[in-house]
Length: 366
Length: 252
Image 1 (cartoon, chains in turn red, brown):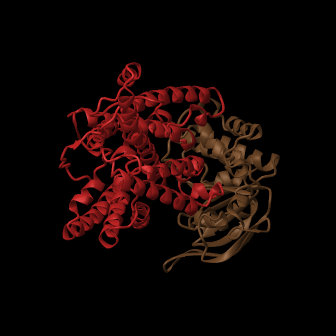
Image 2: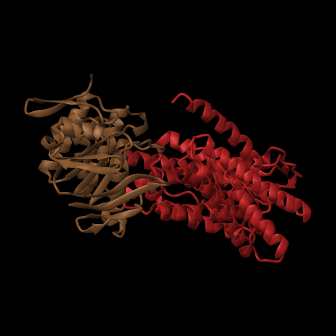
C-alpha cells in the first residue's frame, strides 16, 4: 500500500494567528438527532465532540514555522504594527486556514468513504486504500501526467476519478466471483488487487521518470496546501453530504442484496452511488493531498464499536472523528521535528495501524 | 393471490425449479414442504423477485413482480430468507424500523413508530429493543427479523424457514403468531417449512415440491397421507389423528 516514507523534510507551513477558524466538515449536533431521549443524548455528545474538533482546528491553524498566534496578532494590533498584522493575516488566509480546512475536509470525507466502502462490501476490514481505489486513482493521475502533462487540475482529477471507479468496480466484480465470502479473504483480495495496480503504476512511473511525482500522490501531505491549490477539495464536502442523505440506503445495502430488494430499494443503484462517492472522494483527495491510508478503516470501526452501524446516526460521528484524527496527526506531523514536517500520511499510517491492531485484538473477545 | 406460471430456474444443466404453475389464494397460511434441494427456497426467492427466473412469470395481485417498481412491491409483499447474518451492528428497534422504509423512506411518522412498537410487542422484543441484533441469541435474532417483516405490514409475507433457531416454545409461539396475522389481519403467509407436523397443524394449504416440481397442492388433510408423503419424501411416514390434527410419525 504505502511505500516506506522516504521523506525529504518539507519546511513547515509558514503562518500565524486566529480568526474564527472554519471547521467546515464538522456537522452540527442537531444533524444526527434521532427521535427519543437517546437521540438527544447522542446529539449532545456529538456537539461536545464537534467542539473538541473545533478546538483542534484552532490549534492547527496556529501551528507553523512563522510565529502567527492569537497572542502575536494581539501584540501587533496593540503595538500599532500594521504591516506585521497584515502580513500575519495574509499568512492565515493564504496558508493556515486553507491547510486547516483541507485537513478537516480530507479527514471527514475519507472516513465517510471508508464507511461507505465497508457497507458496500459488507466487510469491516476494507477501505479505499486497501481495495485498489486509491491505487487506481494514482494510475489515472500517472496516465494523465504522461499524456497530458499540462492538463488543468480538474482534468487530472477527472482522470483519477474514472480510474478509481474502474478499479473499485473491478474489485467488486472480483469479489462477486469469489465463491467464499470469508471475512479475511475480502480484504486480502483487495490488497492483492491494489498491489497489482500499484506495481503496474510504479513500473510505468519508473519508465517515464515520474517516480517522485507518484510518491507525492501515495503519501498524503498537507504542506503543499495554499490558497488556490486546494479548493477542489471542497467538492468532497458535497460528496460527504450526499453520503449522509443516502445514509439509510447504505445501511440497508450493508444488510445484503436480498434485504435491500425486500425493502424495495434498488441494490445496484445503491452500489453505483456508493462506488461513485468513494471513487470521487478518493480521487479528489489523492489529487490534492495524496493518499492517507488507514483513516477510512480505523475511524468507522471505532464509531461502529461505540454506537453501532445505523449510518444515519454514525455518519456525523465518523465525520467528526475523521476530522479530529487527521487534525491531531497533522499537528503531530508539524511539531514532531519542528521546524520540518513529516508527511501526515506517515503519521496516520503509524497511529492508524496501532489503533487498528488494538481494535482487532480487543474485538476477538466478541 | 399469487399466480405462478411455468416458473423455472436452472443452474447450468441442473434444473432447480421446473415449470411450476399454481395459484396461492389470498389469506391464510400456505406451507411449502419437500426434501432438501427440492427447490422450495428458490421458488420463494423468485416469487419475491430476489432471484431472476429463467422462464415463467409471477403475478402478485395482478402485479408482475419483474416489472412492478420494487418499492411498490415492497408495500405489497415481504420476504425473509433463512440465513440472516447481519454484518452491520443495528439495535433491534432500528432493524425493525427499517421495515417501514418502503412506506416512509426513512422519515418516521408517529404511525410508523406505532407499527414498530406493535411489531416489537408482538414478538416480545420490548425489553431487547435497544440491544444490538448481533448480541442476541439465534432465536431472539430470528424474532427480530420477523418483527421487521411484520412492521413492513404487507399483504403477503414470505418466510423461508422461520422456525430455524427456535426452540419448541418459540416455534409454537411463532406459528400461533403467524396464524393470528393470517386470520385476524387477512394476511397471506407463505412458509417454507421442514417440520411437516407444524405444516399440518397450522396451514390452510400445503404445497409439496419434489425435484423442482410442484407435485401436490391441497389441504393438510389431503397432503398428510402416507402415500402422498411417501411420494414427496421417499420414506414411509405413519400418519395418526391426534386431537383433530394429522401428525406424521417419522422418527423411527
